[in-house]
Image (cartoon, rainbow, N blue to C red):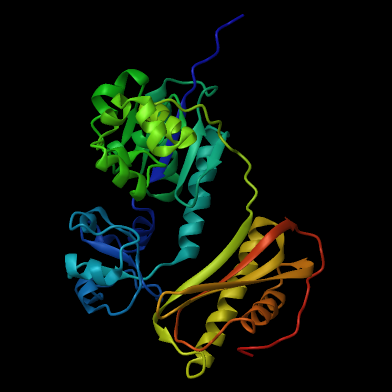
Length: 380
């Protein structure tokens, strides 16, 4: 019997994806610190003068950074950061609104281009995928270069690829030479290329675990690999403690998940200012209708219906409440979603200003049932 073929798993990560898509139509912004975030804005003219575009220093609100160019990252700006904090770090950075339809279009294009060369793909989101190259003919570096060229040809954008024996190392590899990087790793590369990295570089070691590891004097992946197994088990429990040791040694047998059924689909928005349920009733109504319309489109794209609908509210004091409603018939119809959301809202105290509103469809089933309707109520 022939020995098994060694696994070749690639992780492909688009470089500063949302910002890079924006720069396709605004190439004059290349090389400049650009931040994408905040409220949606109309598309800018292709010949827009960078000197006339809004700057982070002019921003006031509670929006967050969706993404930013590497020039903005050099100032310490990163995804998920509040725009006001980002403005303190890079006040002259150009601020652009997000255009998600364009991002989704480019996402579909790069994934289709990759599938032409290597069809076994695990979709990890709008800008990253895992690819199984084990059975794909070709030398690893040449094959990865072909993938990068295919993505560039389909979208005009660059990506970074890591290739390794497993998903964990492939994802680490894709981060090592960004942007436009290509990294091939083997287990023999662990001491020199992986162990010097901070422990938090491993996907699955979050801020709380990082803090606990640092309290134990463990700051790098190498230090984690050298830690006594019993110490890790005692501190983190048998499951997570064992996983930490395995991950630090680059061991990961997870297969690619090529079909993933979503458990729920949601849409939410954080307001630029707190909205009062009474004084800002009209604005809240518009936002609710927009969220329900977008959620209906998301369900249609997934080919499913929601048997339950729920709302999420966050008050000005940061308290968060949720309410859910089970429907007699599953739906993806925007009006049915809106009616269900209003029914949920009637069960929520509306005695304080709101900073966030969200809507969620759960208990998803394949499309094919008739839409359900419930009684209209608040925010009519």
